[in-house]
Image (tube, rainbow, N blue to C red; front, side, top):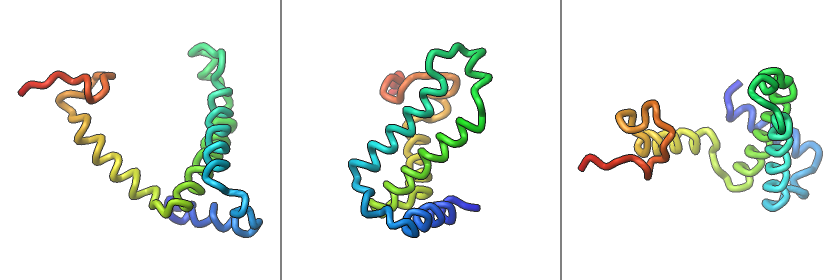
Amino acid sequence: MNISDLEKEIIAFRDLRNWKQFHTVKDLLLGLNIEVSELSELFLWKNELEIADVDRHAIADELADIFVFLSYLAQHFEIDLAQAVVQKLHKNNLKYPLEKSYNSNKKYNQFESHE
């Protein structure tokens, strides 16, 4: 299943339950943040060894919840999420050229200019 089909299923699920009426931008953003927090909570106070043992099903559930909220927001603003990601990847390729960013954790504005 591609992202577009998945988003259509998410919106259909919502619409069949008449939930769109509750989906204000504020509440969608709060819901998204809550889901991100729930994902974060799975890793809270864990060291690297403990993180390796975090339940993958729980991680998948929280990632799915995050994607659902992202889909709702994208639909609200009439944004093609897949196209937005493609465009962002293009921008990031320009901001982080391989010759400057390879094996580096620096932000693009921290690269030394060779001009």
